[in-house]
Length: 373
Image 1: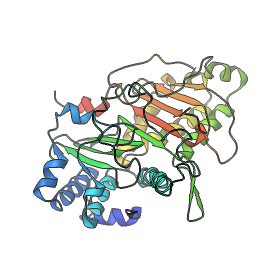
Image 2: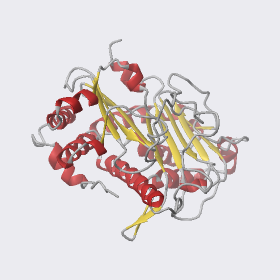
Image 3: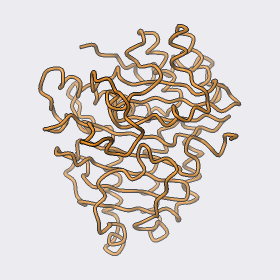
């Protein structure tokens, strides 16, 4: 088994920031993108570069393994060491330190799955559920209604090498372009338009959502679980009655393949919360809005804070979880320019160990507000 090393956040920042602190966030990303492209040969560059208006490539993302839903671009497996370092430096340049750490933890979890599969266990601590292979599709097709699966060609299901990077358009400080990075349980769609960095739509997931490495317990989406449960517990009885839905939501509603669709807000409106509760709601939101680099995250959080009274919080499922473990309930946060979903997977195993989440701005997915048609 070949394991791809992950550089530390600090090391990647040193790689990606060559011009010092005077660089803007956009120039830092452009420099990192050009540095990565310079490491590639002509064939690799052709694989990684797409037209900015390539709608098919833009929507070619999923929670499913690449053997089920193929990705285009170039995988970490196809790169040598310096190329992988440059690729991850590019990803790091677009994210906050916490956001990049989350990405690394998701990928490390997939490596746990790969090791479990390789040694024949098929299920380690938090590994794929018994009787199946993780996110495999049910009979009849793609469970999430996403893009056509096409011919995945079989092959490995899991591992850190099976994440793909693509660039749509030409990296520029003025002209819009897009960075995509993803694979199993990860789809970062980052549109850069001048100083604007738009992270939606982005999917983050985890399987296992709790694992141990070097004696340390890791929960890639632990804060998303803990903060939401704390908010629910901070509500009074009347507020909880409004927030908790009287029906079960089993999976993402606006997941892969659902671009352009909308849903009606449900649950408890934040205008009916007190100041402390609204602050807690914003803190939950920051677990997604804060993934992107700090300048874009600050602008996004300011927008969402201004709209907080028009934001809704809805919960479906059990309202408890053991300390240090993830919730098994679905929840949704929805505002005028926001949809967040947290959806544990009910596939026969422990749903707390297999989580999908979705982050969208239905009015600005893929940065369409800043992109000329």
